[in-house]
Image 1 (spheres, protein in one colour):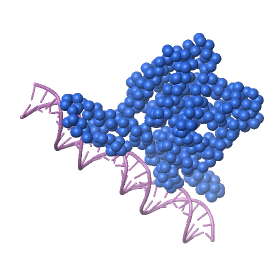
Image 2: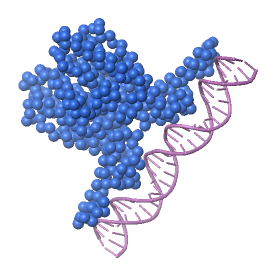
Image 3: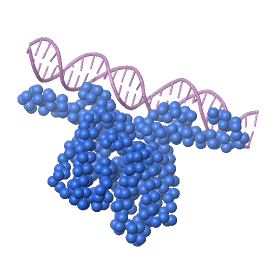
Image 4: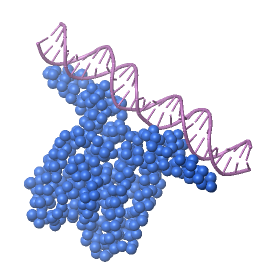
Length: 219
Length: 219
DNA sequence: CGAGACATGTACTAAATGGTTCATATAGTG
DNA sequence: CACTATATGAACCATTTAGTACATGTCTCG
């Protein structure tokens, strides 16, 4: 398959480079599934190798070790989130709408990316052993907090939000409420017979989350 | 040590039984640490055996397999929570005070029992594969929801809470807000330089959580 | 006291698993 | 075209790990 792709193109250089990058990415994708599925210790390199278009040999060729591969997966996952919530333009919107839009984006992202949620869970099981190696996280988070601070203070000065809400607390609240119904989906579903992946339950939950945070922030 | 305990007592029967029960419990305690620390796949039977007063042989004698041991650990953890929040007496308190007391109890329990939080996280990583085997969870949860429903409706009829809040949504909210700052402690701490185990941060968070839920429920 | 049940220590095993060795193919370059 | 760097396949290895076989001790009860 790869060979066909190769001969199909004229510029061999590009092909080779692309090919390698493709292999790397393919490994990364499969690894993301596996690590997010079973965690660092539960994941199996052989399993990843098998599901890859490539081989175990290549995994070590490109990533060196299981842990490094895991780190690469984690980094990629975090990079992807970053690209999402940096995209909301706060300044064109009224504070109330901006806040709501932040909540909705966050909520949806978690629903659509359970693999991210699971990776973060796993990293916390590991007591954050690897997150320190991933560059750019603090900067990104600072930006998130700054955004929230701006929205809050704008809301306060417009009289729609009340004073005294700490942006970090607010962020934590939004995160918690968006994270939990994905992270604890299985134990919760079992305990309360409420399937947290049904559209109905999610819609309801989404409304609740918006409602909760809005009534907290409202002046 | 065990032998001394034995000779110290007169009734040999009791001693023997107690001894066995003690061994079982000791294994269970160490296993709880290990599983909560590293998850099911990360935990090592040999590691547990070593930290036990007993041996690997005994682990298999009493529990049969790693998975069974894990299940026993999970069951014990859930049983312990149950005993806690069944203890709040809702009926003597005003709805507002009752709600606050539920929140505080839940909040504190999570802080004081990170091992429970971690076990639940792990069980969700496993997609709830074992929680179905644990008896009594549904009944307990039903009781929790019933309690909340009572508090809510009492509050509504007294005019302090607003109508239309679903007790399951409320429970989920309380859980999420109490769970997250323990479960995501490490990634959050790193990302925002806010150590979520400091007394100060916890106090502040506790206030926030109460504040959030109260302003949501308030009429 | 002697037999059987309960409890426990020692040593072992088979399979799984992360990682490596060695050989080799392929493509771009002087 | 030969040489070099990149890329890849197949078999292999050392270690770890869940689980076991077997012998033995100890308590209870007839």
